[in-house]
Length: 173
Image (cartoon, rainbow, N blue to C red; front, side, top):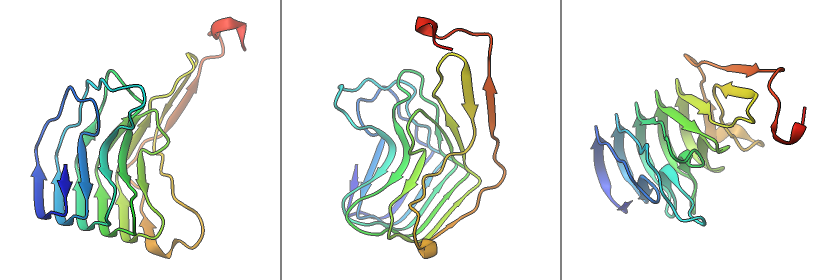
């Protein structure tokens, strides 16, 4: 956890066997968060709210989040890169990250943030009903006056496959 810290370089770390957020930040000014590997083994309490990278509380600024990988094996219900909190974040660059999650918020930036660039990330959807598989990019962007956000999607991959021959539990078709 990094609270009210300036000039952070969090580079090349591996986190595993956790019960909560892998990386947590609040009120950060100037950070490079690069080439980190998130947990594969996540064992949390039933009421826990987990994130790979979470920015909460005071707004953060001048942040680069690049080249990080989150590929969980034991719990897919963990948000990816999540920037929320008390105020708008500023000058945030999120690029070239790989996120595998069953949550809607693969990458989320709160409304009111400024100078945000999201580019060349891959977000894979871990949800499946036994017949459906999804892979691709998911970004949740609050609609309504997007002057504060520039999102560039490129170098990404998306695929949806459906197996009509596979039965669902309980006979549903």
